[in-house]
Image 1 (cartoon, rainbow, N blue to C red):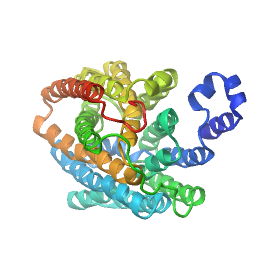
Image 2 (cartoon, rainbow, N blue to C red):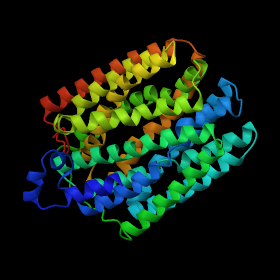
Image 3 (cartoon, helix red, strand yellow):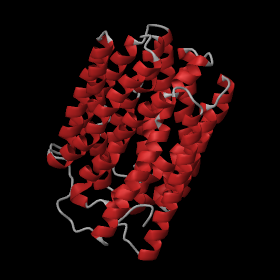
Image 4 (spheres, one colour):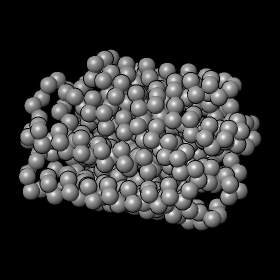
Length: 416
């Protein structure tokens, strides 16, 4: 519904967009196919309730030990690590529509299996399946967005994509806590499966049979320099996600021990997309017009230090007060980073580039539980995360300086 309203605002002629003022500056001028796709993405994220609650469900409903929770989350991350490059390769190979439809249907089946299995071994195997299906459609969606936009409009579109996902997640986290406390956790898996099926149906209806990804187009600037910057920024992103992933791996256990019930935990989770919406809507113009590497560096630094404050929470109230800090950093990084990648990627390989870059999420989903298990509840996990965030921020600044001094070309995007 939110995306439909925004689409109506942004479908006005260019002259009317100026009169529309505040809304037009943030949401104006984007193509209609983009908004129709956002309706599907927003609907899918309304069912995004399993993953944030997964560690909580394993620890307090399935009664697994912290080490066993780490094993299951590692299995999920292993599947996730495979999914993103696979989804990116499929997006370039068989098209955007077929990739989104296939992976969303596969994810729906994985959620139903995970919610119905019993025993640690079966749960680990099901977690791998869910990880493979989870978010595999994202490279195809990001590529479709990049295909239909350029320059500042691309940065704007990527920001709106991120905003749409988080507005829907705001509702999902609240409903997830209520479902977990009332009918039970199994309804989380059913809701997530239904939402993925809805995304598959929307993608099949909205996108053409062969999504309009461009054929080979020469990439401006130095391919070698762009490639080096791509892999450097991908490494920085891995650090960001490894630190940020502790909010889904280690933080639920910390909050559970401070007395948070599933309903309270759901409300705390809802702070994330709520802060995302507020920060992004108010700061979107600055985020999309400032060089992407500078915004990303600021974001990863805030995430590291802010999440350390939350991880050291002595109470639920302290957690609620500190969550908005690192969420603001999350907004900065994840608003700027996709447009940076879109600018670095050759047009005919956007799916692969987004897939490789997106694999950092899966890799982090493997690394984060292992680090949490090794730390065994120690405060060093959170202190180390804060230091890692600051180091990654310094690396972002170094890449930005290198870009400016060597004139390495970003084809399009906020760092252009």
